[in-house]
Length: 188
Image (cartoon, rainbow, N blue to C red):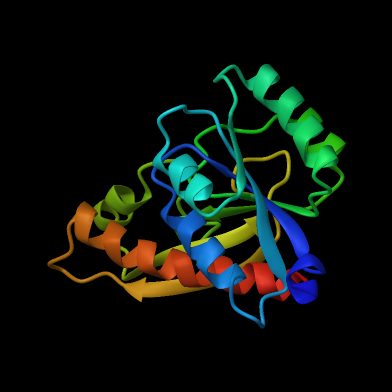
């Protein structure tokens, strides 16, 4: 148990089902892992990832949707739990520049495109419409600009002529699970 306690503490912010959260938790349970997920915060009370965190005995909180309230409470919880890194995993809010500065710890985000291409939403649909040959995912540091922080890792997949928005999303989600855990291990 001493090894687990010496791992760096990670907070994960979610808004939905938490599939990337599950991958991060699963990886954190491996002996070789350098981190442990210690805190899960959501801006949605019905986020399925909260119940997964609870099942894994990880502190988890729903904080109301208003961004200023969320950020204020999140800062207190991050400090109280000695969090060293924040991972945004399907967190559908844009953090304020003030929050980013006040945390004083790395914040990582996973984005479903090969940044700097296709920043923002609806990336799979846009990649198919633009007839891109490849798409993928990017894990990057969060800064004050949307999807513009330093890239940590990228994974790519070929877009087939038969791909739909849904089929491409499924392929990329599998890549996300690998990319996020690899990126987190890489930065420690």
